[in-house]
Image (cartoon, rainbow, N blue to C red; front, side):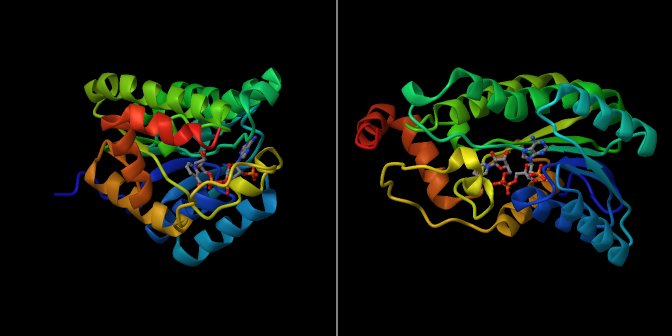
Length: 261
Ligand SMILES: NC(=O)c1ccc[n+]([C@@H]2O[C@H](COP(=O)([O-])OP(=O)(O)OC[C@H]3O[C@@H](n4cnc5c(N)ncnc54)[C@H](OP(=O)(O)O)[C@@H]3O)[C@@H](O)[C@H]2O)c1
């Protein structure tokens, strides 16, 4: 049985200007949600606003750099002023970071953690009172299969997603007192702009690359999981295989990964 009906619900989604976040925003617009969509690219967010008008969904663009704590506070203030209560919060904005640990400047770790970890944690803290006032509220944290298994050339990214994973598991138990669900989405390789970012370009080992799935596929699976009140999904068959392999045969996984270090 469905745990919630998202039609007409109020929410906030970060990283809505491209990739998984955009596809999620489009799915939710079709359900006529009232939503704040956050990102740095104004034009992309305005396109969502226009799409919202076609479907009768009120879309409120918020332009800001969520690696900046002040912007996160402003985003939470916007939610308080415009939506008053939240039925869902989707922490999706994120960045990659490619490179061997020994070649990565430590400042890069701070950048990655600021957006991928402190961003979701602080935003969740700030809007928690609004979620408590929501209707069958849910927090959705977009992590990664690399939040389950560390791989070479992605140490900072993996660290940020492991941190998000641990945080989500901890608060899931605490939030149940308030009737707030916590869903962790762990995508595998997905066809988005993430790998085109300046921090993702470079020479990397010749991995056996799994076929990427579309952001629309990840968004559909995420919305289904929100409706059913699931705790965790891995919307990628190959990715789910990797998570299971590393859980049950961690030493074998170590041996395989050493080849690509
Ligand atoms: N693609 C994959 O294979 C994959 C796999 C596992 C997990 N993920 C996770 O999925 C999430 C979404 O990524 P994606 O793949 O859809 O990549 P994407 O297309 O690059 O989208 C990233 C989103 O985050 C926003 N963003 C980036 N830096 C920001 C900043 N400083 N302040 C505010 N917003 C910022 C971007 O908007 P602006 O540029 O407009 O700010 C964009 O909307 C991330 O958390 C990522 O780690 C992706």
